[in-house]
Length: 116
Image (cartoon, rainbow, N blue to C red):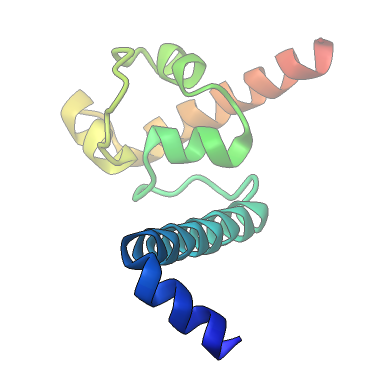
């Protein structure tokens, strides 16, 4: 095996480097995918907290982020990374009120999913 690897390195150095780079990237992406899967498998339907974003809540509760933004009267931006606390501050309402609105919207979305 060592002899084969040495031969490959001498004759096809660029190809060997490219293969090792591709193998490393593949391993990195496999680890990253597994980490995301494990994280989201354990973070389903978590209670809404002020530090969360609307997208995080939508993913945790398996609801469309667009539908949740629509229910809250937020602009339908693709990349709104504000936390719930920041959104409440910008709207001029207490965080507890916005959290209650989100929970109501989540319940409505779940009822709508059950009806389908």
